[in-house]
Image 1 (cartoon, rainbow, N blue to C red):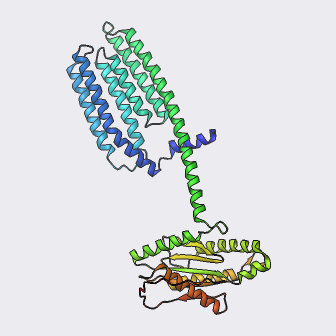
Image 2 (cartoon, helix red, strand yellow; image 1 turned 135 degrees about the horizontal axis):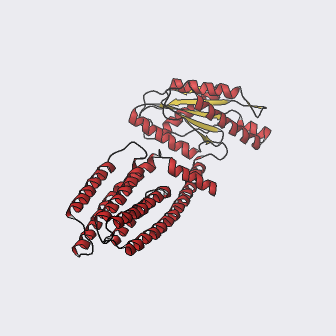
Image 3 (tube, helix red, strand yellow; image 1 turned 120 degrees about the vertical axis):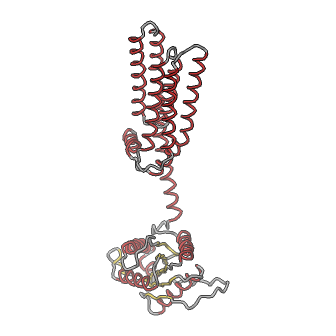
Length: 401
């Protein structure tokens, strides 16, 4: 648990390149900026009311100075928070500097005013509570120390400069209250930080579970390639993308030759092992293939049914797909599975043509595969269709054994 916390803390404090988190934090700061404006407006209003009632006093010059400074800093932060900053520390440092200036203006008000101790304590507390939700506990501790030190320094300066006006007892009690409440805020922040760590850990666990469930739903449990449902979804997606871009793609339909004989002779366990090894070998070859035109989209491979497999080659014409299929066919024919079993594969190739349906494309690949079987197996055959016409009917696919 300690190690997990260290890892998450390290990520929280140092991994500032996390763009989604960066954007979320930026949006949070943008939402909090009006809250800071209300904070200053509220306390300026309370300070004005306190002065009007005679509870506290401040000179007009000091009031103008404080109000001008507060307005300028708020305008600056509001403008800066809406900038699309590129530095990853921008958002966190913005919140930190806002809190620092809040403490600075509160301390300045305490220095220029008389009898405003209670108001000053409330201002400090508001700034620290803002920091709780935006900064790490380390920076919050720094802010708390800055607030306590600033308040103590102002009490000392005012006591030495105007000893007859300052009430040491009242200011001392107020200082102790500031320490006590600041300590409580820090403890609260630590609890909140621990909850964030736990929530992050739970979210990671949930994400891992979702990913595992997704893989289970998409994978063929035996060969660890895509299952038929997923491969058909990706084929439909590839067709839609091709219809939009006008760029064609090709498919390869594989069928292991005489696989029923393998199961009958060596048993289904050996047959399953061969299927698994075949899928792994083809996936490896597809990933490393450099004879097919380079594309930003990855090649897709899945189990179509039984001993049949389907590969989707984006941005690949019939010639490139046929070359790819022939290379895989030769590799499989020359490979000894489990160091003792030799198998061959027949491959049907078809390039997608605009206006064609997915069943029509699969039917052409199936016809090419059937032709490879008729020509003696361990062959690659490619379907090169004439001009397509939409007949409104879906062809029936042949299931080869």
